[in-house]
Image 1 (cartoon, rainbow, N blue to C red):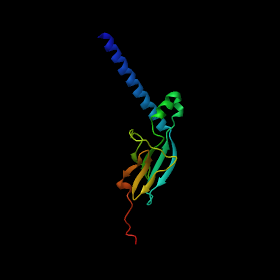
Image 2: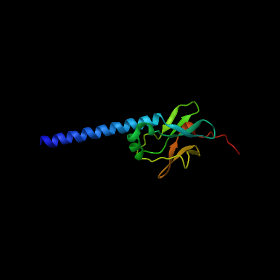
Image 3: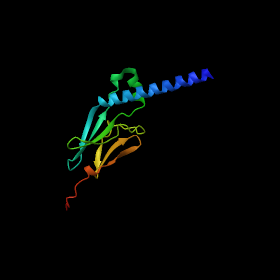
Image 4: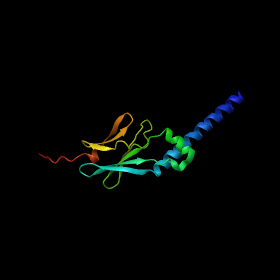
Length: 133
């Protein structure tokens, strides 16, 4: 019974250690991320930044995390630089940006994923109704 308890404790500690290491690398790669593109909405009230995380600074561990992480993530900001939305921690999505970029469609911020486009309807970024003819 003691051997099973020690084995179980070791496995739990190993899984926790791997989880914290993965979170540390993911956070660090996002902090060092490079802006790939910026796309403004039509009224110029909001923009989407496409980021490419930098896993290279974490060596072999970074390469391993990169295998299971998205190629990119997206953040929507107001024209004043206030963060409104981010796909950075949507772990079930696989985002990319080098082949297709984020865009605005009818006031919706959308970005490419491996399963199609995802995005947000953000009221702060909605197009103004100018009653254009």
